[in-house]
Amino acid sequence: QVQLVESGGGLVQPGGSLRLSCAASGSLFGFVTMGWYRQAPGKQRESVAYSPTYGPTIYADSVKGRFTFSRDNAKNMVFLQMNSLKPEDTAVYFCNAATIRSGIRDDYWGQGTQVTVSS
Image 1: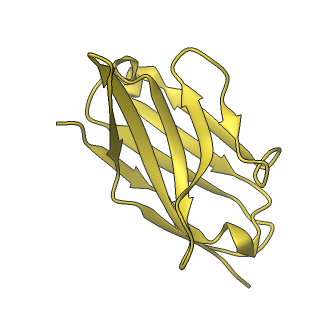
Image 2: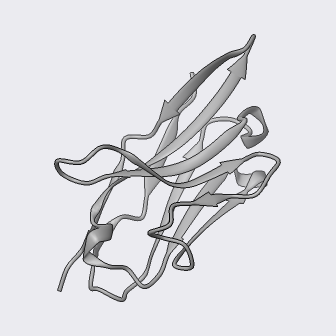
C-alpha cells in the first residue's frame, strides 16, 4: 500500500515562502506521475504542479514563476517550494502519486497539509 505523508504547511504572511515536503513509502520510479494539488474551502481540488517521472513539470497558471516542484529520488521525497505567497494560495495541499498497471491508473493521496496566507 502506497503511503504519502506531507509536511511543511503553516501560516505565512503575504509575500512569504513555505516549502512543502511529501515522503513516499516506495521508490518514486514506481509512479508515472507525482504532483501537488490544493483545495480551498468551497472549491474543487485543483492541480498545482503535475510532474511525470520522465517529462517536464506542468504548473497551474496561477502559480507559474512562484512555485517550484522538485524531487529527491534517493530519499523518495518530493517538494513544493512556494514563494511570493498570496492570500488566494490558502488551501489544503495534497501530495499525489499515480501508478498505471495493466492499463489501470491508481491515484494515491496524502492526508493534506494546511497552508494559510494571511496578514
